[in-house]
Length: 98
Image (cartoon, rainbow, N blue to C red; front, side):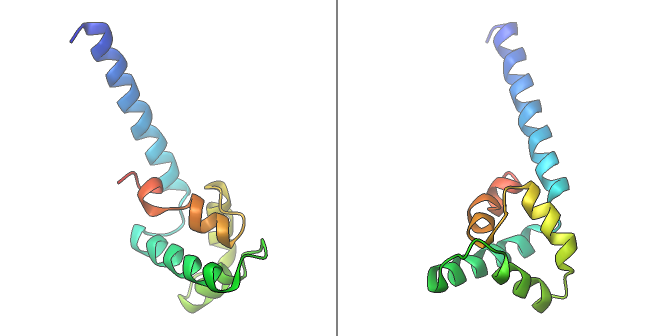
């Protein structure tokens, strides 16, 4: 592998790591909590549809003793502005880079 190619690969990997770290810092939940939230939201949205609010996420937060105000901002920063967007855009594998 040439030095230029190796350097480009190193820069790409550093960028990916920095982006993953940024997403993790934005996420107000642990990886397991986020997985639980997303699974619950997927089930609720499939059953009831999405009204483009965070009503199911807010219920989840209350049931898990989490302050919604703390979660709302972080999830929105990750692209989760409503229940269906949280379930799609806040996938733990994407957020935590697994």
